[in-house]
Image (cartoon, rainbow, N blue to C red; front, side, top):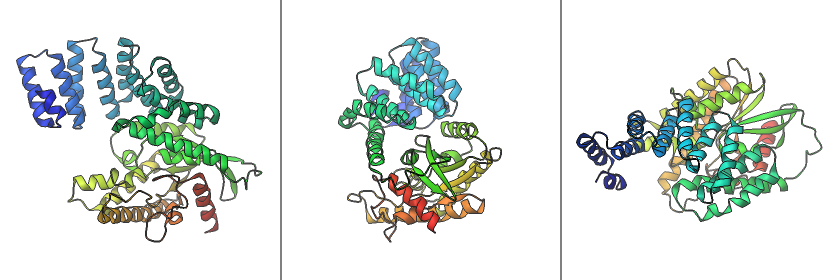
Amino acid sequence: LGVIFKQLNRSEEAIAIFKKAIVLKPNYVLAHFNLGLTLKQLGQLVEAKEFYRKAIEIKPDYAEAYFNLGVTLKKLGELEEAEIFYRKAIKLDPNYSEAMLDLSSLLDYMNNLDGAIILLEKIMEIDVGKTRLKAAINLAIFKFLEDDIKMSNKFLKESSNIQEILDFESKNYLAYWKYLIKIIGMHGNLSQDNSNIRPIKTLYVIGESHSLVSHRLQIKASKDNFRCRALLIKGCKQWDLGESKKNQYKCKFEALFKSLHNSSKILLSIGEIDCRLDSGIIKHKNKYPEKDILNLISNTIGNYLSYIYKVNSSCKHNIIIQGVPCPNIDTTNISKENIEQLINLIREFNILLKRKSTEIGYGFLDVHKLTNRGDGFSNQRWHIDQYHLSPEGMREAWQSQLSS
C-alpha cells in the first residue's frame, strides 16, 4: 500500500504506511528502503539517509541501498563519504552501471577527472542500454575539453540513440548531446579572421554548460590575445555557490580556483540557470509567492559574489563575470504573463549583476545587450539553441566590450 501511495505521488500517506509497516515488523528491510526513497524525493535527505543505513544494517549485501545512500550523501555535500558507499555498491554488484555513472559524476565534482573517465569507460564495456549512452555523452564532453575532437565525435555518434529515449532523466543528456554537436560543427565553420594571431595567455572559463561554447575560442581581451579553456561544473547555479551549506558545486569550484596559477584571468559563466522559467528564482518565487522577486535577485547575486570574493581572496585571480543572454525559448505554449516575467527577471538580474560586479572590481561581459532585439527577447543572431550563445556570439561579445 505504501508503494502504491508513493507511485501516486501521495508521499505523506506513503510515509505513514511505511512507518506502520516498520512498527509491525522492525527489521522489514524493504519498508526501511522505500521510506528512505520517499523521504529523499521530498528533499528530507537527513532523515532519508538514516533509513538507508538501517536497511544496510539489516541486509549488509543490499547494493541498491548503498547506492541510494551514496546519492543522498552527495546531495548533502558529504562527497567523501558518498564515494565510499558508491564503491561498496559496485563491489557488491560489479556490473552496477547506474552506480558507476553516478560515482563518475561525483568524482567529476571532486575534480578527479581521471577517475571519472575510468568509470565511464568501464560502463562502455559492460552496458548496452541507456546508461551506456549517457556514459558516451559524458565521455564526448571530456574529450572535447581535452581538445580531442575526433574522439568526442566518436562518442557522440555512439550515443546518437539517446534521441529515442523520452524519459525525463535523459532529457538533460539529450540537451548536452545536441549542444555539443552544434558547438563542434560551428567551431569548424568559424571564420579565421584572427587565426594568425598567436595567443599568449589562457582565459579560463569556469561555469555550467555555457562555458563549453567558449572552449578553444581565440579572443582579444584588453591588450592581450587569449585562448579560452573551459572548466565545466555541470548544472551549477549562482544560488548553489552562494548558499551557506557545502555542496558538490562548491567543492569543484574551489578545487578549480585553487588549481590555477595565482592572478589567472577567469570568466565566470554562471547564472543563466538561475533565470529560467522552470528553475532558479522563478521556481522559488512560484513556491513562495509572498517573497519579493527583486529581493530574491539581490540575495542570489549578493551571496554569489560574496562567495567568489572570499574564495578568490588568496588566489587574486582577475575575474570577469558573464551576464545572462536574453531568452530565446519557444513561446508557443507559454503565457504572455510568464514571458514578461522572464524578460523582466533577466533584465533586472543583468542590471544588478553588472553593478555589483563592477563595484567590487570585477569585469563584466554583457551578453544581454548583445542579444536584445529591443524588447528583452533574443534577436536570434547569436544563439546556438534556446539557451546558449554560439561561438561567434561569444567572440562578438568580447569585440563589443572592446569597442564600447
